[in-house]
Length: 159
Image: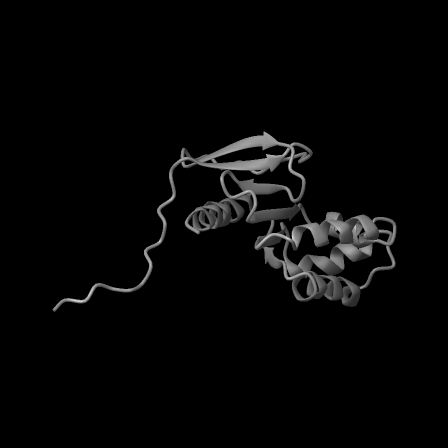
């Protein structure tokens, strides 16, 4: 007797995958691929989601450490924490920073803030530990970022 595999097959995404991005995004992600269609829409939480999966997936994007530091500064912290609470209510929530770790000290030097490397690390840990949000650092290189996004959105659509 032949036994069929009990492993679940991955769901094949239907192309194109429609990705909603928040209408308040100043420079939204774009992928030059017929497999993805980006549609502007007001999102109650986060910056990106996938059509048909809005109740399960949310992605918050920060364009770099400058934007992140503005969010965790004492002036904006309450709003930022409220966003994190809302974001953590989704089963698949992601916090994407388009920068690399070695740029944090440079940004701290040229930004008028009392933040330290230790406080930035504390907040990164808090996002993952306390709020349960997956943290992804995708760097500044556009080609690498777009390759990451292509694979990331494709993998999410298979869920």
